[in-house]
Length: 444
Image (cartoon, rainbow, N blue to C red):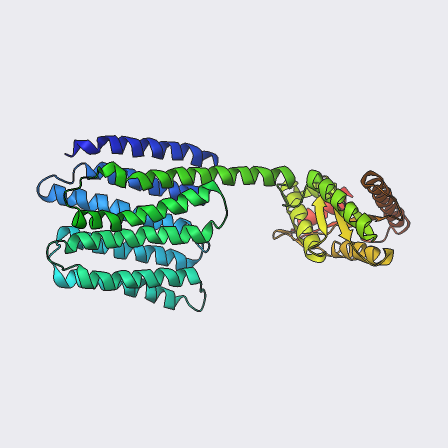
């Protein structure tokens, strides 16, 4: 047993526990993958204690230690792939796991085997390239081709140096680990292109981690009498762990900022962000001396949808309405959810009142068609109130009051029309279940 490695095992275990504590508060697929990889790193350090055991036990410990370190790198790399949910990406992960495991197993168990090692080295280039070609029609990404390129270079290097007398096996191990962790650096650099401490530390840590597998053998060859503690070479691992913890905290802060300004159900700006954008729009309109319009839209029959079909269906209605409104208006305009079933739209720099009324009419007409919610079809309507700056009001509060008043006038007018025309179809719900539809009509 190499007892001198026990402090490193303890340090990595504590760091993994700290990472797990932070990841628990930011529970995402990426954080779960990172945690899995750090557990692999901890297992690598634990297995490294027994690598000097005699016979098969030592071989098994070396195999487990090197395999865990390699798998951790592959998981880190895959966690930062933006197209991770693609089926081809999953096959690529399986291919990398297989080729790395096969080569490491052969290298540890039988380092003098010529053709098995050559075959395993060739697979480093063939498997990623073949998987990429097979999925080329369905998916293509430059990051995928980058992985193919550096694994092809790894295959060439291994075929050239893995049988070198004396240190060929060591060079092969270093080359595999360098490729894996350089891939982590490249993928994290692509995924986290932002100027934050977490991104800088994580990407720099992976670069230093990969560099260890070049610098360490170079130092051993050039300065054989220079003794460097193994803990020095492990510093990049701790640097990466700290960087990842910072990334999780940064993501949590960004999520909190987003939730503070957006409606969690629809993803639209909430009233707080709406008021801020309203003030900005008014300032721009005053400077440019152009008109601005506020549309207040209240859904008809929404309470009846909730009471008849449940709040889950009501939530689906709100999400679909938000999507419809967002697709209809321009990107420069703002759609927000300012109440339970109330939406507000800010229109900037339009020609005249008629144009704003046309937008309001089109939004109302879009909601007159039945909404397909999968198991249900729901038919609702909407009442729209429009206020124009500077014709109707000069400040945000007065503009909102004017739009609200006209929205309620439109709602009252609609109710009067329904009372005059009792033969009209007043049912807001057209459900695929005849019994539910009958119950809905009976309730009216």
